[in-house]
Image: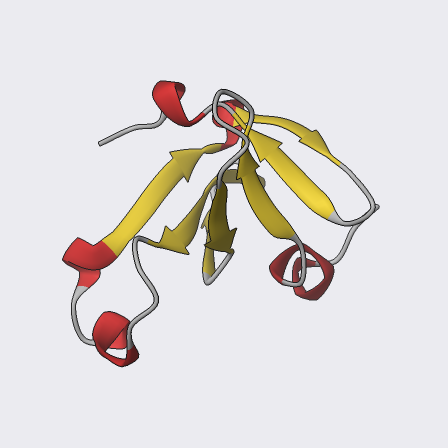
Length: 81
């Protein structure tokens, strides 16, 4: 089992390019089904990301391929727009 706070400390890495996409800033949970739907990472580092949702990237839970000790590996091309 992993805590949400532990997920936020891990780097999110695209498995296709090896590029660091950022760190999780939010987690979307479906309360009716009791499961995680996806994660949100900032598109760019910005002080204004809290005011503008357009500069965030949503990744479905299915895009996550592996949660490791230090990183979360994602298939960025499978992301939802």
